[in-house]
Image (cartoon, rainbow, N blue to C red; front, side, top):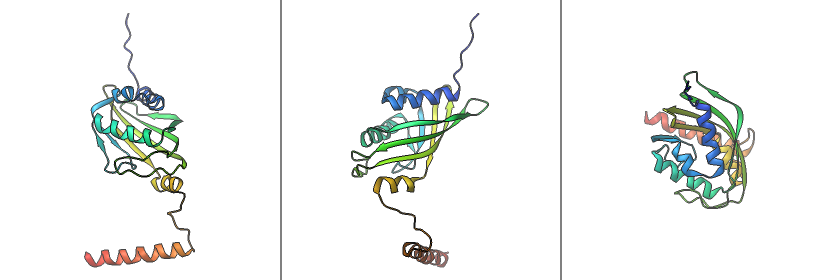
Length: 174
């Protein structure tokens, strides 16, 4: 008697993460559907559509951050039908080389970022990856400067004044 073995979304997601962390991009790409879409706030023009675009983005990340490590924060939450899962993760990476098509210069700084990937799966292949994380926090860590002004500071007051000017101009256009 032969039993059918069906991979769950969590199984596919773990294979994806394992291939990424092992830097085996052929295996990583092999887990993706030909029409895959990956949305990541670090992309210059998200989403990446298709295996070639996803490979290009993955290569850019791993070249710029050669020590990039993706750590799953259990549990992986899967949908009852096995078509979607959510992975809470923590990454750590040091920006050692130029990043991406825009060519952001390396800062030599290390960042630790937490986020979530929502992964859609069809016929055992990943069709969509939706990555969410605090992009401002990541930029602050990598650049060594604060972008979010603190209340009561001159930067906070300046940010509020600037926002009010923009809001007023926006109202006048409407």
